[in-house]
Length: 493
Image (tube, rainbow, N blue to C red; front, side, top):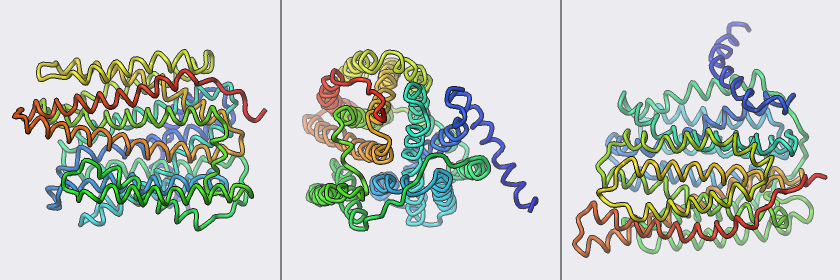
């Protein structure tokens, strides 16, 4: 027996040290549950880091498998589709399964998917591995957020949500940079080969140290709700991701969005009927709490702006300014790291001052950055673009931490799992919508500039100007929404 357990303990040693560091960040106020939260934080960092490593590697994968760009993009689109379908089910999973079992399922799925991606001999198996990875990732973030809402005293939630914001922002920022470094050293398979031992270490650490906390209940699973989830969120995310794709038939995206909306209407009607007997897969009574709805609306707008910027800036830096992927990753890194470092500080400020003094000024800074990005020219120095991205990232740090805390903190405890699942679902849909908005406006206006005789680099910049102006118009609604935020009282009281 000792021979079989020693490798697991050895594999988990580095992860244990990372969890100890996370436990220090959580702080003594959350004793005796801080070890649970720390393990979940480190695991969430690992799975979120994986989300953004593919973007830089797509061209290498296309060359290895001899596939088109549209087919390769399914590695990202398929990931988002799976997340959108699985996340609504996590409300039921969080009610039904204890923390340790759900964590084990999430990290096992993620590890299996990572291993399959690392050795996939054909593109189809690589795509299947990404789907399995996404299934584990979709479970992890709602698990982390629901656990914190159940275990952490309301007066300390802002600080912990600040630490979550650090995880959410630093991991995606590090992903492209890590991917660029690994691609310099070898094949794209090295990305998955590097992630696999880390994931297995976290799985071993969870099996070793994680214990259950909180209560579970025997919530029934409605199969029709699951099917409507697939029919609603799947085509909707797919259709949004296809807007702006010149190679796709013109009818494909509207048809997919139409089917998705029809499925979504059916899903909502089904949940409204089931929640009367507390049997809903995703309880929509969370929207009867105005503070939750307002925070969720602004969060959706913020995710649209953030995902659109993440797509647009690297594209411009590579195609208009001729930068290498590694250089682009390094330019985007300071903003993500700054956002992460500021997260815990913002959390403590939220606990003291509430959301409005933090969110309102930050919203105006984001709007100013969008206006600046809409004036980019070939003569704009790289450091100015980096400074704008850092300013935007710092501002989003002052936005996301209060929004997460306000949204979930406004709900009673029995709705925490459904609130977390709703937040995760909205994030995926809003991110896809933001990407579609940016790409569609960008592609259309770039073509207009080309038809007018502009050079390729100038045409791309002209298209980006309208995309960032469109983002600014959308973000204006977020600025208005910020004035209606308030710090929720303890909903359980």
